[in-house]
Image (cartoon, one colour):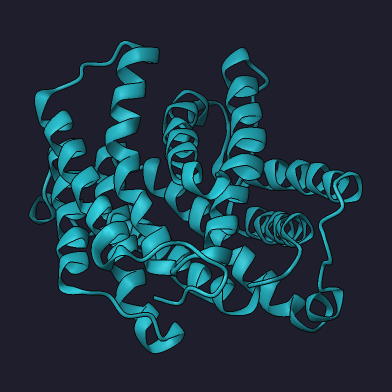
Length: 296
């Protein structure tokens, strides 16, 4: 049951992160807030790991693969979010979301040679519909994007999340979920702290907006959404799991309309519908389902 509803909960929580980040980003610098966020998340996850004992965890495999777990976690959390936050300092969120829509397609393309995953024609059509849907939601196209540090940061974020997803799917399957997530958060905190010291003049303003944003991004996204993402990667194909990101821009637009009172254009609804159809094709073509042995 959890695996069936996990994609919907994941998309809802992850989409809310756009709203939270938009409200909190003026009050803190990217790498500083990520360092604090991942540090707190690592402690909370470690506490949960002690309280909630997973059934028959494979600790021997965990000790053997910890380095791969750390590398994947830094890519999926620290570098991905840090680069996307950096991009949002120079680019509108819509442009960043559009670039981010390349993640599922790139994951699907690379999952073949790396993980041996194969997708059918209708599933590739689903990936294409997902990108088209995101383009409608954000209202810009790739040709309007000028080269610059913001574009480079966003593209770097796409590559980081893609490689981190594939690496995690390869080395972390079957490992204890909470302990794995805690280790990845701790490693991400250290990496973001190092980047902050070298490249950033850190700034964190304690305001109501920054506190709410920090709490949501830490508990809701780092613990809740990322935990669901790792759970889905454990039981499903990496390309299929990454396809869920197509739904986040449209859902974020709806949440921004409901919570922030922002304008909701009809194009966003059409785009969300197209992206939803695309994700449905990716998940349902060939009647494949999540299961512990699934690799396609």
